Length: 253
Image (cartoon, helix red, strand yellow):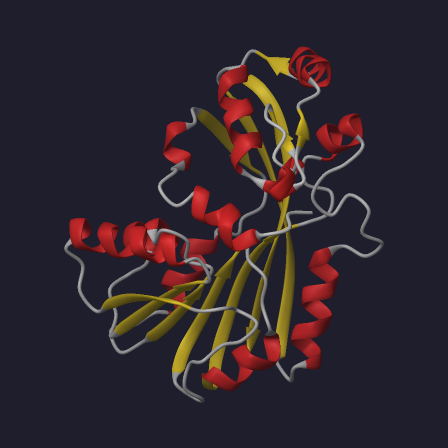
């Protein structure tokens, strides 16, 4: 458990997943960005929660009347604004906001999107127009389970209920209708162990995975032997295998 998530994510503001060399096989016919595109027209207003440095919004979201991306890290939003200038895209803005203390107008957005971030369904419901939609993609308990089991820890490792069910039930309780929960199954193959190592250092899969002891984030020294064991046991002709378990949720106000 990180004691200061604002500072933790600030450290990652200028880091990109594009630096990691991997391929993926998708076994579920549900793609987050495509689900967004299906529902967007030129008059749509979109709120993207947990936008980070804005790469997904700037590269994957279609043009429309307005897109607002929010993140609780001011450093992330600074990076997003720099990326916005480079992109040349219009009708997009970014601002600092806590997902649990939203300050967006009521009955304003046509679509709210959230990818791998915490949400408050009640506040999302308020900011959506009637018949507006929530599109969510999250990381479930069994994500990277073989790796977590080997290390005996990791994101949601000790949770009694999968986060997918927690989100699903809280979205229904907030008043949403036509709520769909879609399990998403993906296998990723990392070209080298350095690529996998970089992923684990910069994501909360093993949220204390680091070579340095940092008391502020309660990180431990890396168990190099366990990492090498995982690499050995999961090396294939395609790369080092990592089994991912995500989930998608679509809901209507």
